[in-house]
Length: 265
Image (cartoon, rainbow, N blue to C red; front, top):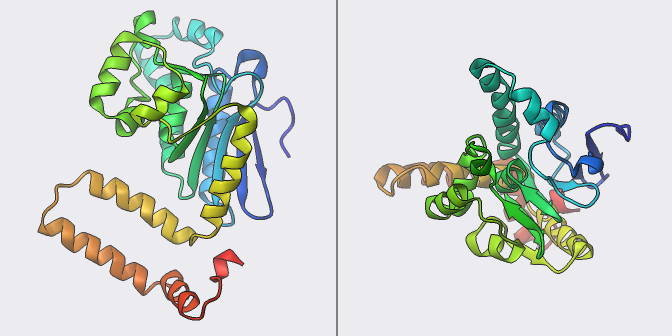
């Protein structure tokens, strides 16, 4: 168990449910160098954790993540351009580690998810938000742009919504976040997050872990290619590989024998 002073906490149940907690409640879980490093290290640990099936990302205290810590931004203002690039690259790589986790990833947003906090939401596979959560890509108000989070936000909501929200820094709530695809579920209050966690955990534990990872990779691949004969051949190759895999054979056998597969016992 991590110490309470750690900016990032990790708990894993015996069933393989991991909960990653942003743990700077006094700063509304705003990013600084230590939190970014802590998240990167945690995601690297989870990447190789075969027993972990689903990863929830949440924030301690009143907010999910308020974006960049003001003291961190003050320090960055004194960096050279190269120093700022190195600093920003750490954030960009942390988001990539999250985005590429083989397990299903779920953001649980409440209070506020600003700037980089909204980027974390976008980098997860699934996101749930309390309906009054405040979202904003506020960078242009500071003379900046949401560059490092942009690949994940644009993937989640598309370029038109991203352009409007990046360029205006307009705030929006959880209901609007669901409308544009930044989140998939909206709940009335923080207590409503628990049933969604249980529902998604149940769905994930019923699925073959390797197939979940491959399904995520499939979407990434297909989204970047035009529909042609080459894509048809590649998708046929992928399903054929799944059919002859250990999971594919076990899944079919379990279905025919009317029993649960080995990953769901």
